[in-house]
Amino acid sequence: MHIGMVAFTDLRYDFRIYREATALAAAGHRVSVVASLFHAGPSPAWEGITIVGLPVNRARSLRHTYPSFWRRATQALKTVAPTAVHGHDLDALWPAARVAQQLRAPLVYDSHELWTEQSSLLGRPHVRAFWRLLERRLIRTADHTITVSQPIADELQRRYRLRAVGVIRNLPPYRAPLAGDPLRPALGLAPSRPVVLYQGGFLTENGLAEVIAAAPGFGDAALVLLGDGPDEDRLRRLVAQAGLEQRVLFHPRVPFAALHAYTCAADVGLCLIKGTCRSFAYSLPNKLFEYLMAGLPVLASDLPEMGRVVTEAQVGLVVDPLDPQQVAHGVRALLADPGQRARWRLAALAAARRFCWEEEAHQLLALYPLP
Image (cartoon, rainbow, N blue to C red):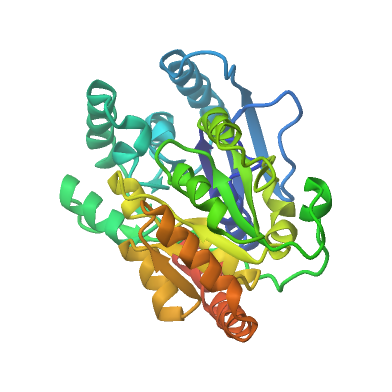
């Protein structure tokens, strides 16, 4: 089967698409990916996978960028001529659905989050209404809909009266912890200084302002924010205004192929997402499982999905992400007792054997049976 994927994302950092594409290729399918190209260099080279990069001007408004991308993606996907179409997220579903219909090919809608409830749509009712209308009209054309957590699956199924929505979690391929430390030398930190790590996007209302407010209570540990995003300038201003430049450090986003080494260099992993929108409240993010594979104890939000994983696997603590005092107390507790840290590490590494892509990929492969 020739599977044509389409996505409006930077493939250098989208580990979900990479995992799915490589798993399908390894199973014997031909895979082509049509995606936006946000940088001047070439598209990433994924072995055995054809990538068609469509340059996107990030300086332009999305109201202009999206229609342009949809037109070009539709044409590129038709040229690829797949026998099945896989649309990644709602902002790529229009060209995916259109080409699937024209080619009479089956369509899979892969919703990476509860798109219409994401934080960037808070206070923007007209924009939200547009996306909800688009999703309502297009989701019914999909032969299969999949998403990243059970609460999001339940919501999509209820909202659009779907027969079923599959869950394929954002689990990384299993990797053993790595020795070495690319993180502290890059930031000028002493080798012995504890690192409390947040890795991921700097997004509106994702809890990083509260984490920065809590940082003075982390003892001698440094808070490292590894990533980028639309809220980065505001977060840097918060750090400067509070005089926390020696306590809170920023590291640029790292391609996913190199990320594991950076994660393994930390001492604590933060997964403190605020439940200000249902997309956040229902989320089960990559970073949680990446921390487990690095053997890090995790401080997570007391939200249903991520809180359940941390509590049941006994790999850390859950706190109210809106309370900087709770966050600071949680970090100190995770760092305080070497014996307990060792037990959390062992529990995290054991959980990583279960929460890995090798245990999850079969659900994706079942959508695309080989002849």
